[in-house]
Image (cartoon, rainbow, N blue to C red):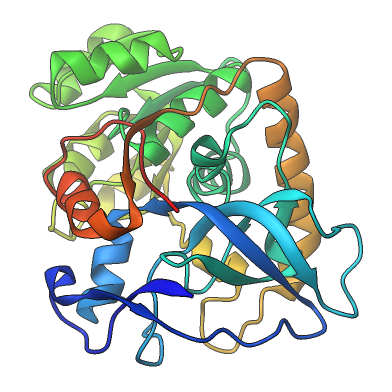
Length: 330
């Protein structure tokens, strides 16, 4: 089968399309005829060897796929050959076929096409886990969503609104802020003057939950814009700067800083196979499907590329030209 192959960690521009073999699925695995694969900032880190998890080389990058089931292992139940599915996988997404674990493979709702379905293996679950599992966001609270035009940020805006929260969204341009407003944000503000903007909107009280994939100065300003008993959930550092918060803020405000690595729930952390979280993940996807059916989730794919143009897809993500998801159509 054709695949984008990473033979040595380094620049993604060095990868090439090649033919590789894929083993038959094991007892609890599923073979998928891949129709679409998500492209993300995290993918570039894996290719460069800068991610905490390093696949054995050579490998095909990509962790988010949607397609049609070709074959199932002997122990697989609830999934059948010919079914449309999406899956979170360890690697191997940028290829014509992929192997997925049964517990991380989910039936595609009829309303989704394959590119849109690539937001459901990781983007929507990451935002859900941050806001619901970690942030404990409740109806009537106020959430501050950073990076609100990207795949996880826009997902967070929609999920927070579906939970009954008031949403303040940040993004870098007027066009991106308008997209967040179109997807349910009650207020949109630039990063400049962040703390003052939040204080004005909340009558000086601050926000109950912060969703932060950016870090750096945005994180530090968010600390000052968080209400007493607030929860700041950090999910990444797209700014390239890991913040060093003054802990007295937590003491004075009785607030919490909570980290989320969604990969832990997929078995991507050392010593963890992900099975312990399979029930919670299944329930989360059922909840997300309910939101989708209710019209509360509207996945955005702004760019699609053929497999051979994988480098152009990566360029688009890293240059921050996209909103929502960038997808390879295979």
